[in-house]
Image 1 (cartoon, rainbow, N blue to C red):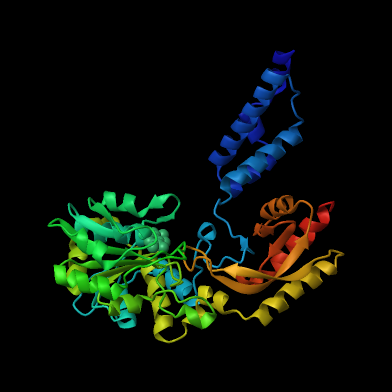
Image 2 (cartoon, rainbow, N blue to C red; image 1 turned 120 degrees about the horizontal axis):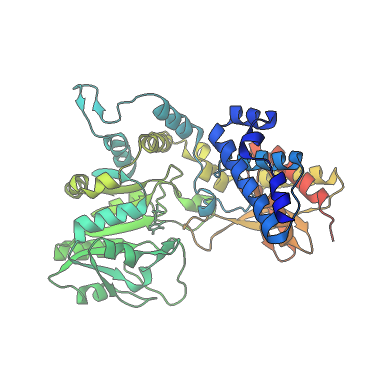
Length: 461
Ligand SMILES: *Cc1c(COP(=O)(O)O)cnc(C)c1O
């Protein structure tokens, strides 16, 4: 009888007296344990009522409560091993930070700082000051300000420069920046009216000229950071747009997105436009992300003419987009590495991009040997890493990766994701590939352990 069964079910109070649960309450919190116990008891009750299940033994019930409580206090954000070879992986946290940046962020978090305090005058200062001088020195900009991310930089800049006015933009640059967010939507939020000019593949200066009205408030160029248009294409260069803007008395803004300070060509990639170049071209404002090719914390970097930056700093929206002290500390440390010429050596994004093929081959072979030692066959293959994160679309960096042949590589990839720590691999046809370029050297041992245990547990078909 269902009711007889339910009568055997211990109450929460009784269960909570058990040492297993009192220990748990000491370790976590009483409330967590009560919630876990209630939830498990509910589950059992439902099982009895709907499927006439039996009441589990007490040890089993206690075990389930412990597991549930442990899951409740486990952080959902956890470290993973990125073996995809995508350096700026948007879903895996974009740019990793240098040790210098991490230390600076830790310090800013643990002690008071002069974040908004002028030590000379003993009075209120500006938080924006901490990144501005460095950004100007590195790029030649007159002034700079930092907000939460590049999307915020766009909303703020467009609001200040073009609210209630028309913005000219090439049809070929109406990009979706990721996660379903599109430039036209961001523009609408700023109260600016989008005026598309030219054709998707070809836009000329005369297309901008023909669309000029009394309401035209801005010329916007958006760097096609995450896709490529090839073939029969044309686009005016920045200098021509700046020239047009000057003739018509309208500012020009350049959304670079990836925001590189280093020349990507020296790493065998196509040349990504640099922040310095946009500034030198004379645009009024340049915007970029802090956590793409710059390799710093999530931030929106705005460079430009002093009078416009001043207007941005005074707009109420800047308060809503305000960066945190840890961000400013990490960004400042990252920028200092560039200033000292140590960016390529210190910043993980650049270290990964510049890792030579011999080192990659050596690491892949080390993994291969470790698998061979436990009787697992794999091969070291030629494949390609990508920069990712909405930069250098279609660009590939030759790499050496570990390839594991399997009839169901997706199943294998799923098991690796389920491991501790989760390993994110790539699947190409019947091959599971693991690219050393994006695996931190200090994660090698963990990766090998996960591979050994996951692959040997699996009965390879
Ligand atoms: C990535 C990107 C953005 C958005 O930057 P977030 O820092 O992610 O907000 C905007 N514009 C371009 C061209 C981008 O590549």
